[in-house]
Image (cartoon, rainbow, N blue to C red; front, side, top):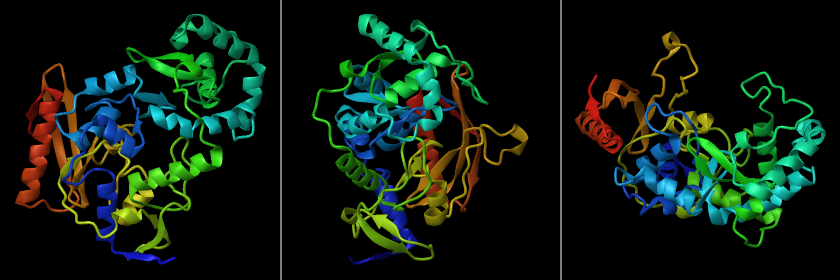
Length: 363
């Protein structure tokens, strides 16, 4: 098979277009999620929740968070392991869930704990069968062995057990009650469609992930839920000035490119793989909310600034809903902004403030 030879500009444009961040905006929320394959859930909302911010960056201020709420309520979209996916995509995960149930996958490190609390697991299933959907607080904690960790999950027995039960396909998130997840039996939440066999499902997921990323490595860092690599999907490619071989979606090769300015969530899939971000975009970025304020270079929740095919800087801004303003603390320029870039980025900031229902407060 021919190995495609790409410049960094080619590779960046493929990645931007694949992530629906070029000048041609997608038609709606469901189309966007279907193409991207997911919206990641994160509770941090210094600007807006990640799922909403990602949707806004693609759809613009015509997008309303109520659209996402309604799609989840109607179960056109579903939540699985902190990712929002289309309901039809659940058929691509059910075979993997069955492998977790027969204990053939990599959850052995905690398997003894789950086995020790099997009576609690059965109690939860019984309560949900009788009265679900319920929040974790409404479910019985009859665990004999408490969950222990070095972090915030200490003794959160029911929450941890539900996570494993979701991986096993026994329970699923049926909705939200405020910020709390509502749990129910998976069979009452997931669509009753034929399950795609595990090997075929993995191939399809890799192909769809590559279509959403445009260009990616065949193998790489293991992430807990959604991988950054794509196996043998697509076709091989090399990028000028970057070591190693990539996989590229051939449908994106040789396509015209028209870019725009965009403000991205720190969790955006365009920059999620930090190694790829450095290699293709030569862009250094870290999420700094966990750092002491004095050690932050760009801000608590700095938004990467995309302009055309370049990641050009970071926006340090905070949504002050009580005061009704979007505070712009700083715009860090990785490349010097010319007049056109400045005007385009300023317009995006104004659009962000408008979408949030706030007044932009310049630095």
